[in-house]
Image (cartoon, rainbow, N blue to C red; front, side, top):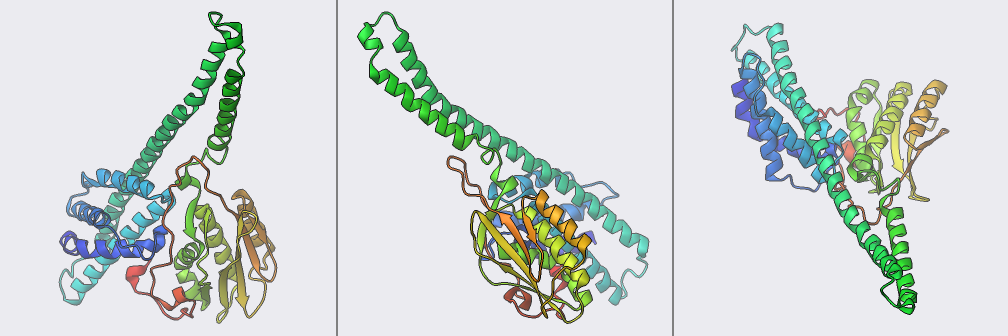
Length: 380
């Protein structure tokens, strides 16, 4: 199995680089860089090395994971979506190994492989994958720390300039070696007043509650449709099991929001609606206009009815929305109102690219797809 995985690592890495765009909220039109593909291929080779060992994890998994996490932060992705990308790589690896086992069984090769062997293979892959995820988290948080140090270094420099000017003006006004007329010059007072105002404006803009957040940890500039499509992809099996179609509006609404919170809320909202849906129904996610620093996401059903009627379910989702700073309005259409964030002056706007879902399936175009199972390579 290690040899089979090594033989497919380059092809698997390239397919992962394209398919992970929908999971990590990267632009659908973005061509994955060679570095991204090479990192994925190196991780796959490390997974193969772990399979070939007697239980020891490949030495370079940690270094690869740290680099993966640091690169995700530099791209402006959230840690949540970076780890989802790694999870997709593990899922595709497991499927590749599963396919290799099936192929060998069909050819009558390796007939002695039993359930315990399959579990052993999965356990070793999970061991390497967990270490990669832990290392990626460390690489990401290290990059966060470096970003904070850079921000505060620049902030100290920006604050010292007006403060130094004020101190110089006060020192001149107190210098008894100067004539009294010179010490009382309106020029010194105007200089101190002007720089005090500049200092106050800088404190308001660069030390506010909003500015205290790292952009990639809190808000990302994303396509709301891309977030909704990622949720639909996660719940595809639930929809197919119930014979329900999930449609996503094609409107390319983009906003700077807490993408992780929005994804979690939409996941709970759509999952609860699916539990109440019956075969043949359609659930549709649409996006409202941006107004008053908020953007709305609406869930409706066809035939028309309230998407969620269970009071406990509505209460649970409403409480989750409140914890995330959003609001939920129940009714014939469930409306989730999510706060937006404007770019804060003076703060680097590290953002992830926005775009559509890289999925050629009919569902990504707003067409019916409940009966069409996607290729297993696109499990995530």
